[in-house]
Length: 310
Image 1: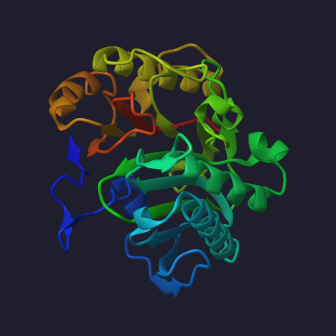
Image 2: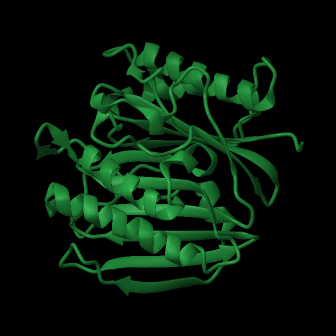
């Protein structure tokens, strides 16, 4: 299995956020990258923005150093600003439609006051960003891209958005409540993402499966059991695939790429042994140490799988 973790990857003594999945880097291999610094209204530091284009796709990335030093309100506002900068940059490319987003959040569970943690503040900012992006929350079900949102032990907030010439088709999981409709038990604003997106990549129609964990309905399941959480999230991925393909056949062996985020380093060997027999056709399974979006969740998986053209 490929290693894409940041356990020992240090920059100036500070842990770095996770890297993008290798399959994304491969799409843009050899393409030119445009860099710029952007001044944000709610931070005394500039954010770095980069943009690449290749094969009818775009990739816009933003990084804000020492974002974990911001207050809850500033972190919310900065997140909204960064989503706006991503949108502004992406719509100026030939591939203006966001189909997949990765959010790497520093100290994701750090308390931010009033019973909220940094992920709650991030979700408030992301919600505001998508409200500006789409104009109306009633459009979320039709337009939201799928996403991953995990934490790391560095200081930098990093967001990557993969764009396409044509908009993707959001896919929801019948076993789960859409994340953008979560109750206020999970924060003042819901986490805004689709469970998966159907989109065309250079090698055909693909199902981009977002970060999937042991959640049924909107509730965390099997707290304390790594094995049961993994079984639950695999059931969720199977349900997504079956729903998208409109059949009940076991399509796990059609997954091209997978990435496993795991909370505890000691769990890696158990997860590798359990994942490989399930994703038998995956050409690469990446293992990344990260903090999952809820403190009780131990593992999350994202994946890429082919879909038949309709």
